[in-house]
Image (cartoon, rainbow, N blue to C red; front, top):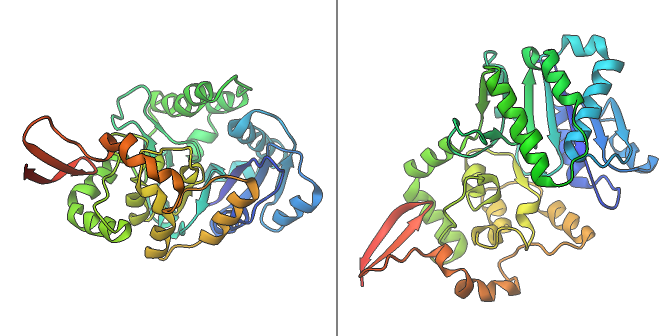
Length: 332
């Protein structure tokens, strides 16, 4: 398929980090790229991606990722109209993930599904009938009968600066999926929450064994989440071939109830994935406290968050659950 990726970038120091270069190199195997940064980048930074992207916009606009998607889409349609009209897919991708795998299988399989109108990697909210159900906007792909649709183009062109992140999620992230669903466009989520749950059920004892090996003792996962990409279930996504790891998942102030995220480094090594050194360097440069198994704040988690890790029913039974599946029941 002929594709163009609109890649949204933001860095508070106006730097194109090596992990972003790695991500672009992987995407370039399957698609041409327009790079759009919400920042005033110097030419020495832009030169880093000159051989990977056929055009770029690197100016502060303050409309976040969707503002970058809008600018890249407009540039593609106006400056490269002939190319635009010959495309099979336009993708919206942002830099909120580290590349730890490959997209080869994903694009190969999606090439065999021409009936799909739009697709992405992960979804949010298990019930696809829920009005808040959406495919998450860090990686979205639109086929011809979507991106050529004038109403879709109007939706993109009407993107504007909003006051907070929740408004962006409601109007643009959820709004875009719901807009296409209501237009009866056929969608597909490659690592859907439903498939993740099925994988867990089919492989629960193997998963439990793997987690014990990583954690060195019984690790109890934070179970009650729908946004799997930001939870301990990121491990299951990686096992299924997910090639990305959310940047913010590794920050110490995010999802402290998820214990396995503190062992992301061990997981990357165990699964023989790429990028761990660039991940550490990126966070060091930005001064972020990154999760690790020796982090001092772990000391208070067992007492403060114990109910997140161990489900104790008020009876004479102790119940141990992994991903919501009861795997142990002991009479006390």
